[in-house]
Length: 321
Image 1 (cartoon, rainbow, N blue to C red):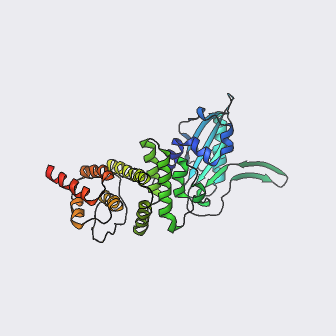
Image 2 (cartoon, rainbow, N blue to C red):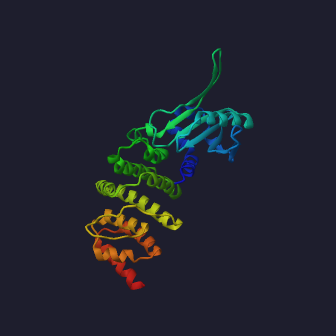
Image 3 (cartoon, one colour):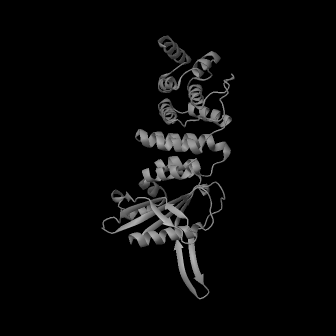
């Protein structure tokens, strides 16, 4: 999984929402309408000769002023040695290159270690404290997902998937993320970005998926349909881009559906959630559908109210072929 790409895309798309969620004090003096993003910033590590690309650098004005400053956000999916020194090096070079104040932020998304990570780099002698550089951190594995349930923020909807979650809570958290996303009523592209993020980091086992489906069936019909539309939209996008692999585990519906492609597993999962157990013969008909036909079925199933609607759709498809 390309963790860096996923996080960069999320934070760039919802940058002000990210600041509002984690750094409300910064938002007080940030002119949110002035935010722009700088091109890739590449630096050479003078000690080792390695070239590093800064993850995200935004330029903004202080509210009510012409003075600008930079916000540097570095995402880290794996713990690395000397990370505080790297943050200082980035700060120093950005400050030197642009001659602007720099507000440094690190987003730590690794699962372990869970103990608080350093947020400072110091240079000191017995008789002289030369430097104390500090930066802000968002260490996701320290945060409780339940604390963000009422935030109704697109970044919260995505990042809850990477916070500290007990295994038995994974279905509940995934549903909570999607319900929050449904309330936000974003445009399709942004909705797919967040739902894809959640699905990437909150894959469920077969038992967890069954529990997810049961919890989904208990919420009110209008909201349930909104969540189903989000799941179906993400599934369709994955098929179109050729990377939808579905759920690693099959779904158990009292029948053996054998080895089916990820696309078909997603369709069967959605049908099982909406209609209950699917007849063996019907499953076999679904397994024989082409990718184009699966896309059509993914759109049509949102309007199915009973198993008869599914069989009628398959019969019409067969009659037209």
